[in-house]
Image (cartoon, rainbow, N blue to C red; front, top):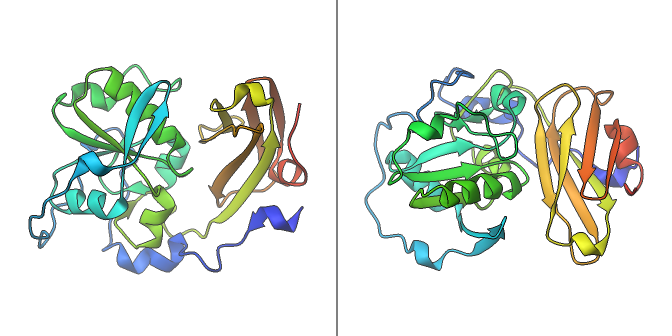
Length: 252
């Protein structure tokens, strides 16, 4: 394996390292979550947030506001926002923000998506781990569907983990490593997304193609390095193990 593309989590909080900060939260990997965090013992004092100052990024032609984690956690503690996980079901079951609903990014969004039952006026924050490519796609679809106040978590799920914020899932005590897959597509596809999907498991990541055709897919993962993954670029599809995919630049 190319050691430059395998980033050990020695300098990053792992699931095991933060387990003591989770307050004994159990895992509900089903579809019953309503998007709200647990009732806090004490909520932060009310403060003003100028959401019009947020940076935006275009996904599928829709400008999505990127909400800073400090503001998202403030809303979360006050139960003033509903949180939606835009990753795959396997990732959600392993670990997710406590109370978050699973609402996978398109084109994998299920027909029985829980957000369909939420009010169009609810404040919604989507998140993923890459750090906001899948969540941006899901937020864009919600905005396009008429939801009035939708944001993507700017720093992503890993920042939430690093801060010791509440988690649920079957693997919150597991150590994870971070893998980076470097690839290159045609510059003609600049701005389009490249997807990483684990074969036979619903685990998703995504990254945009840069102006020069390059891209970097990032995966936080605690499973076997022998598992197979599929890289889907607009102009090619490549399949291999993490060792194979991180050993060189992925191309057609």
